[in-house]
Length: 109
Image (cartoon, rainbow, N blue to C red):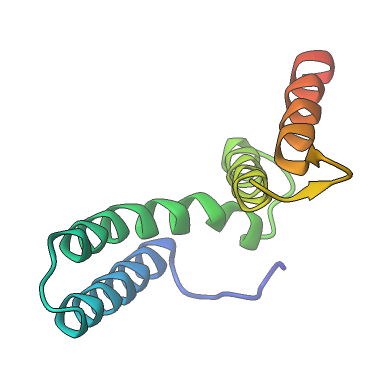
């Protein structure tokens, strides 16, 4: 992914904040100013920039450093969260993947 994005990390974070705010305002207006829509607006405005900053390490193209490791960890956390509730033969995939990640961190790092 190196060279895929040329803008600065701060600009990416501000763009994700603008998108979160726009999306949140849209749902607040469409759904009639419900309190849970306002809460989701605030939550998205807090979470989107943090995730954008956390994912930036992958797209920078650098082959080391703490930012790359944090970015890989954030992406793996999101994958585990996405797999929550998905089962194969009665075994939850998120639990299996999270166990594998913990064992990898404990044994090899």
